[in-house]
Amino acid sequence: MLDEGRPVYAGCSGIPSGINRIAEKVLSGGGVPEELVPEFQKEVYSFYLEHSREMPWRSDPSPYNVLVSEVMLQQTQVPRVLKLFPGFISRFPDFKTLAAAPFADVLATWKGLGYNRRARALMQTAQIITCQMGGVLPSDPEVLESFPHIGHATACSIAAFAYEAPVVFVETNIRRVFLYTFFPGARNVNDRDILPMVRDSLDIANPRHWYYALMDLGAVIGLHVQNPNRRSAHYSRQKPFSGSDRKIRGRVLSHLLQAGEAAEYDLVETTGVPSDRMSRILASLVRDELIKVENGRVSLGD
Image (tube, rainbow, N blue to C red; front, side, top):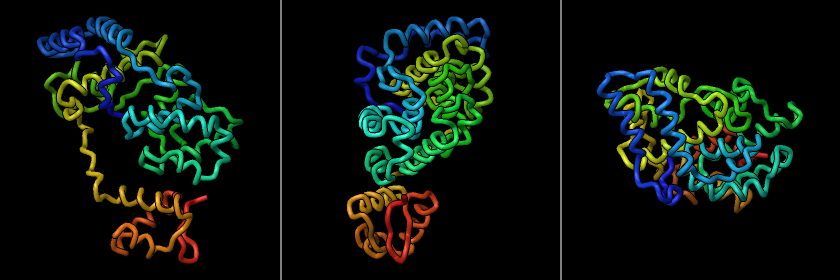
């Protein structure tokens, strides 16, 4: 969930000096002094009060809005989600509408967000909630984690933002804040070393805004210094998109949205991809339930 949109932070010229002072104390002290936690909370909230980002899923943190936004924000930058979220919510305003929609409509509205299997997973989650849970999104992170394409961090984010649950978790921007502030210069830092600090600094009475504040601060830190997450034990570079299977998958789905269906050889000709690679890509799309292949014809899944 990296944010490269500087205009979102109008008036923010850099990392708050108070956060830098804390990092200097940690460095000189060689540890994470417990007495710094209140100061840390104060500095994070001071930054947030002045530079918080306006987002529609924050102004209306309904369980449905939160779920949709969190799935969209997986591996997609905030500015792009801000652009496409309103149209998606307008077209599919609730779980019931999304659950009953044709997949082609969902995919077409999702277009531009990438990682299209998330659109299928979101639709499947809406169907589970509508058919099995009375239309109510559960608040238990363990139950949320059982839904398609929702991992531990996303499940905890949903619980915190939709239900003010005082859960403890680490995601990209939260990790960046704690690495920068409490682990200056350290390398190969494991999340299990960060989680105690997240737990100890959590504003239990107001987890929603506390995590908003941490994420906003993490995004700003990412704009002004070399990404601290490179010092995480969990860091890995994203593979190039150009020429990747993911790009070809997107081209196949775009073609099917326009044409309705196609023969495999048509897709080979359209994309210029060798037939053996196309067969492998189509098989992956079938596994993800994004397409179906019947009698030699390829079409979008139901």
